[in-house]
Length: 242
Image (cartoon, rainbow, N blue to C red):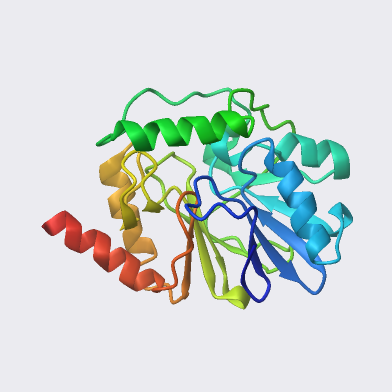
């Protein structure tokens, strides 16, 4: 699904239950997050709609190593030799050598939770393979891949959570540093994401993006939001104070 020129989201789910994105730069593609295993079909379909094939994919950049962001990473590496890039603090998580404790959920509405679990199961979320080939990056790096994304470390959700800034498409990809639709409550609009390991650190990390001027706020969960990064951070801060 096209969001803007050079910017696409896999699939047509209006809720953005689990997101994976494409940055298209002169016929070459960087994938941001690998969603769930079944998203490999969505990737092929979206590329075909652009007149492209898997051969156009030059990079896969992960915002962090949680399972619902690594879904087709190993498949893509085995098909095309594209290794997943992830912050060095989340390498073991992407390899499934570290698992997340059952904490940090926040409020839950059973209907929203059931919908999220059902969606995940239907798209392969019960059997997600570990990432078999990982290339680590660090805070502040500008990656030599389509779109030249810049990495902004935002620890809290996981130790290696990052935002990925791509100025050419006026977008900041946030993984689970924030959400625009809480998968546990159904609440819409910018807010902290659930399943966060260190909520206080995650909120503090938002200071690192408060002055990033990108129109598109693109989370791992929730619809694309075009109110700008500073406004998204302001709304979260305002809610915290309220």
